[in-house]
Length: 119
Image 1: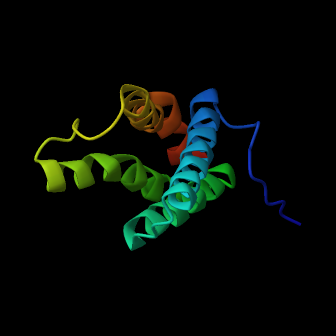
Image 2 (image 1 turned 180 degrees about the horizontal axis):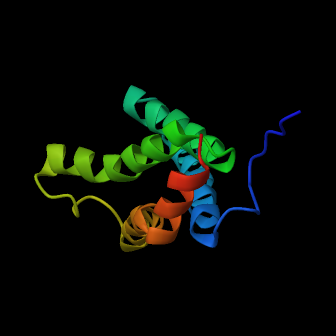
């Protein structure tokens, strides 16, 4: 019987931290939506995508790794679309976490692990 999990301690540290960052980003998106009382559909989609990517990566699913890459790049694409500059419209801390998430996912250790073990 296969076990489903939210965090996978058997994965490399880079993937474990990426999964944690997906969950943390999702929490802050929900918090921002609740505080603003505004429900833009794109933020709900980002929330669902990040939770699904984190859960799928923790369960070693190949589709989740690619979804995670898309979810990590999506904030830059949205800001580029609206502001013509991917580094505008966000705080410095938030920007550092977004860049760290991309770096963790494209790290050679993460890529090798997903290429070998993900289904």
